[in-house]
Image (cartoon, rainbow, N blue to C red; front, side, top):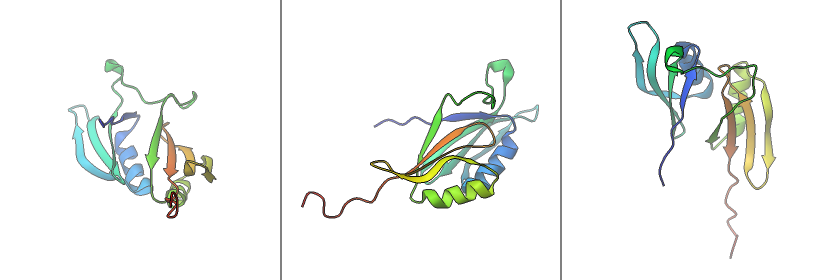
Length: 135
């Protein structure tokens, strides 16, 4: 299977990196490339095996952060082992959850939030496999 890696644009990459690291527990896996004008042209983060790239806005190239007054065009789906723990950190980081955390069969435990930078996240904790299934 091939892989699709999101490349997010935010209005202030330095602040966003700090929030994702402190609140989500992400790790910076490729340090920021800071352009001569001070904007971050590229940085990479990872969380529980999921990876994404990010940059500041480059309006002159048509790269702009989401408009918070509009709905999200894209949702980032993140599979985790503990949705509730991440939700507690997100709420402590100042975000109001849009949904959950809640059980949603057959998907498992789910929650949805929009981060301070306008990106919508769908958290999913798959249900434990039924040990006796099919026996």
